[in-house]
Length: 130
Image (cartoon, rainbow, N blue to C red; front, side, top):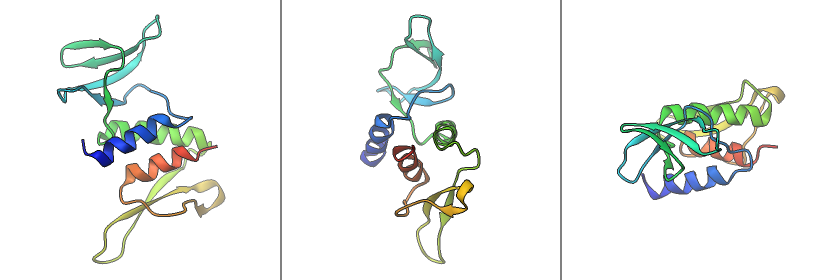
């Protein structure tokens, strides 16, 4: 994972609306993939991985995973109380694609700036969620 991605993970997990939901993907120090499945009765995080179950949280959230992206979008829609919230790719011929996030309820784009990746736009949306 790049330094930029790690910084986004840190921003994401620091959000007041962040929480683990089943389906979020994480990786261990050896890059093995684990999927969050829920909490054990004693409150520990339970992750399913290549060698079975892992209890605890010595993992890094994988924001490059489509499953994590979908889970994050779910959290953002809940936080904004808008099931239609989505990102909008913006580009012009020959330019880099940038992303805004959009709340459908008020019919306007809600962004102070564009973001170079969709995940960056989604992290920003969760950071400022009510």
